[in-house]
Length: 365
Image (cartoon, rainbow, N blue to C red):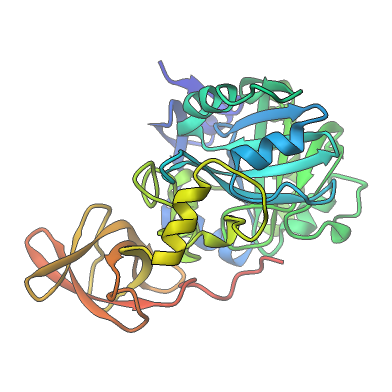
């Protein structure tokens, strides 16, 4: 049975269209995806992302454990965050995630909602030889995200912490709307913004405070539909669409989070090192739709009669006015400017590979 977030009643009262997503009943949209998308691009919106998973890792071996478990390096300063992939021995991706470094011996992992149970089992299966304590705080934690060019103005009204001092991919713990919170300058929209982690029971009060603080800036609640188009416009990958166990970080152009230049041993390192040297047989690329419409996940890509790839995510880009896609294509077809055709309901739509991100005017700091 699907779970409800702490803000379920708020969404119902706001008239949200609710649907099952990753084991939760979540708001897909309140008005239209286009309207909500443009609200975030041009002003400020607020999201309920409480379906995401939170694992706390504490202990003297916390850093060493994460360095083995994840492809990126845990050697960041307390108060910083880093993005990483977590991989299987064959190089396939278990999940992509954000890690907040709380202190030298404490980290908070943020995992995708659809992967909470799988990730929790995977993390626990690799603890032998490490002095650590693991806690799954997913059910006790709520996450409210404030995103858009006006996000800092809204967020600053609710805390005495100086938000201008928080850099991108950094965080601070303090009071927010009178509640204890982790305030992070992170997000998945391409805009400036903050993600506020609070206790489940504090979520409604925080949500109400954000809505009130944002009233003068025209803040609106934003559903998962617009969250998807926002992340696609800036070329951010979505687990389950653009990557999964069949995908390696090298193929997904996430090699920058695979620290092969360090001497640390991490799960999947050998496969990724070989793949980086030999080059993958396929790559993920951005595609701009040259005609009307847009291909969706699963649409096949052709050069003439030859199938050369498959679309992983596709949508109309509201801020750009045309369709965009992410897709896997064979090596040789991944270079910028390559023209292909996507098959949609028996018809061919012309597309062209372009450099990501599609949308380049975001306010992200």
